[in-house]
Length: 158
Ligand code: CUA
Image 1 (cartoon, rainbow, N blue to C red):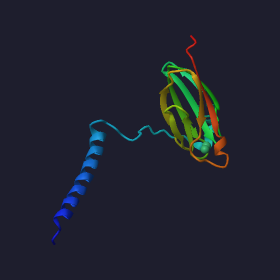
Image 2 (image 1 turned 180 degrees about the vertical axis):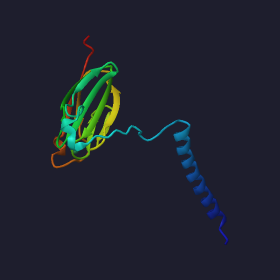
Image 3 (image 1 turned 90 degrees about the vertical axis):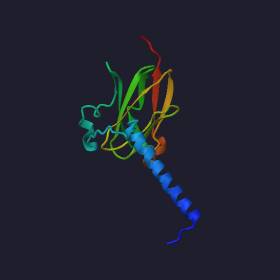
Image 4 (image 1 turned 30 degrees about the vertical axis):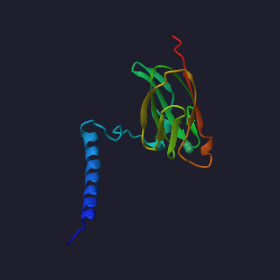
């Protein structure tokens, strides 16, 4: 079968590009140990109320840092006003009791999803005190737009 020179060039170019992209993925995954989120923790959404941690979602201070447990549920976050210290590592642990919700701390790079059945965890440090709006950014129902919370970052008051 005869293939035109230019066509052959384009075929090779396309093949090379695909190989290059796949190569970059393999390289990043292997050499730089970049991987999709591996933290996989499950929780039964139907028994959240009696769960030792998610039954009483709150802010707790442990030697390793500050932990914030949050339950998202149509159409609120519990707790809906969170107070954390500035300049410390704050680990958010969230889940949902019903559908998928968003958890975005507006103006920061903290942005995650609350998925029923799973625990989402991430750690952030807020360098400066202030007040932030927490918004649900996944459409979760008729009152989705009302699903907001508040984060108060307090200065170090030792
Ligand atoms: Cu919860 Cu939108």
